[in-house]
Image 1 (cartoon, rainbow, N blue to C red):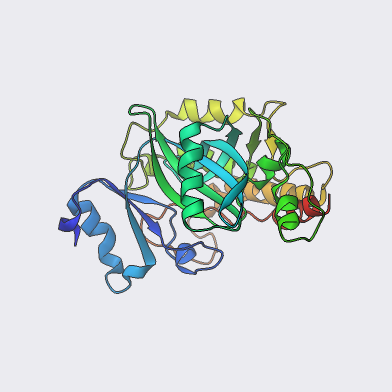
Image 2 (image 1 turned 90 degrees about the vertical axis):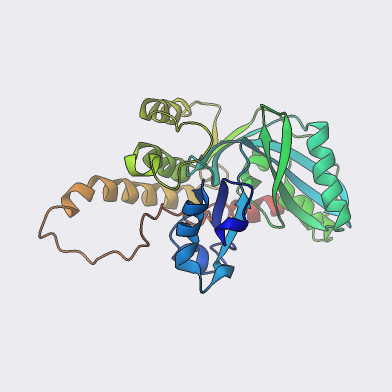
Length: 303
């Protein structure tokens, strides 16, 4: 099987979203990489009886560039471009720090051509990887649902949930505003997980490390995490106009930090605990990002 792949390295991902398919959660990882036919063979061997559980893609280096779009029968009504400044895992995964960017003409053309071709109706996110060395874009995926970037679009002045509601005549349609460039949005829980991932030595030398380039140093990982507690950075979960999810998330984050602090105690021989069931060398999987989707999105539709 591995010998058929001429374009290595490749990325190996659970097939389907973890909220709707059990495989993405039970496999215990977000993404792994194979650089050689032998590594690919080793990675795929445990899943020989269920190849549908995995998605194998040619590795595309670069920075994630995304277009959040609203379409009416294939015609683009609103577009918002943003860059995935940091992800969890750091080698590539779910975005934890995003920034709105000007809509590059090529990026807009690529995204709208795809959405027109399939006659898309509603909201979608088209993700690309931008390789600075070659100044080229590689299509990664099209997600036909609200993304974590919904909070970013709201703070940038583009109320996508309300626009979708107007598309289906739920609310009155109004003028579509131009979004603000340079707005930064952070998912704090995911960024904490990315921090931990960047500090863990096993992840820096494992199959979860990206093939291209060396991983950032631990000093750089800590500095970037602390630097982004800047006043102008917004947060997915913490909104003054919808504060309840933020309170719940704050309590949850305190519990998470406490659990991390107690980990050395749990490793002491004789400490009573239930054995964790994990797959070998598995990287942590990001928890479902539900803090704003259950509340902020609903509030923005009513706004």
